[in-house]
Image 1 (cartoon, rainbow, N blue to C red):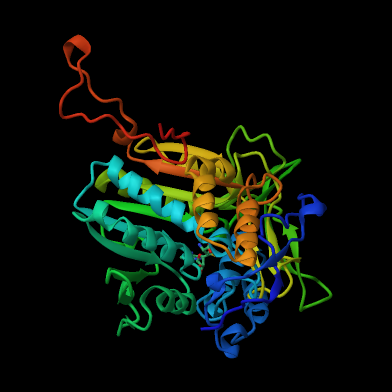
Image 2 (tube, rainbow, N blue to C red):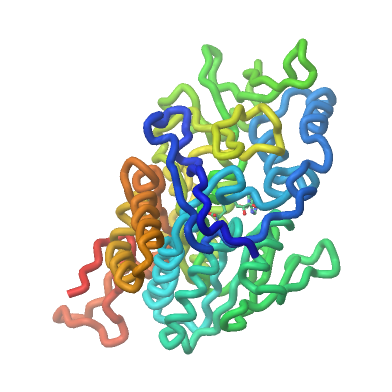
Length: 455
Ligand code: SAH
């Protein structure tokens, strides 16, 4: 374990570095003053590509012609051998980007409170599965589980288990160290749906790792996905005089080592099926993989109960070209060094809502600022400040609060969106004479999406 105690580091959330973002907010000086970033770096060879992704992509294009942006993004990020996420720990001050759970423990703690609140709102089922999609370094899960530990007396009746959906074996090792110490084991066979198992260091809860959400067992679950949907492959479409055409990735004609965007001359299956008939924009990005995962979440919630909390940067069907790359906390040409740079696109929440269908209730998106304030971030900050006398730590607590909530920083670029079982929002049944039925307890408001009053 290595602590970055007194070193000032320069880092930045990917949300700021958007082609359309204001330049004044594009750089933040930050002090990683506590062991929030204490996670060992991967061995040097894990950070290097093991084969050339560029060579892999150019031979593919030579063989079959230009490829959709979605295929380029999927290969670059999650190719099992050379994909960006697959090769190691890419987050944090020493990686390519930083995320809210890495900035402040308060973020994960409030998400932990949300999970318990939704479990209570569902009538305290006997089972609670915490399912996280794309857990990164495991910081969010660790903070959520610390809250579960602190509220053990509330959760006492429930059998709690942890299920992590992670495509990257290297990141799964970082998560395992964080959550289980050395107490995890890889599965013997490569095709096992659970490819790693362990027990949390505090509380001894079972933790399982999966490559796909489909493999997570059915049961009442609270699903959390933070900066996960923005990493899923998008298709890009351009309106032309002849109708919608898909944007593809091709090789630059005179430079065999360089890639370029081209517009497909004829419709592709994706351009014929994924653009809405009444679309008004001239350029759109659609993430069908995100749509499929939302449908799976919706089906699971309507069949087995539970709730999903999705937090990401995004828009409500209004933005056009948001595809961008990151390397070393700087914007990076999306077509340069595939496999060595992060690729991301804003999440279209209107698309997720449409794909969720009628079987679940959708809440939000609300801004991160609104969500965290509704969850009581101000009170939590005051509690931490009262118990802390070290000036450097106090300063860091205040700076991280500002980073998470300030409208010019992460407060308004990030949004929270939730899928809930419709019964969660149903009005308690009334009997004749408008008396409440005894068996219908008053519904708890959904934390984060409603302003809670503590009076
Ligand atoms: N939630 C974390 C990490 C965000 S980075 C945080 O906010 O700090 C995206 C995460 O999703 C990484 O852990 C990455 O390996 C994982 N990931 C990306 N694509 C995935 C996919 N298709 N299936 C499962 N995990 C994926």
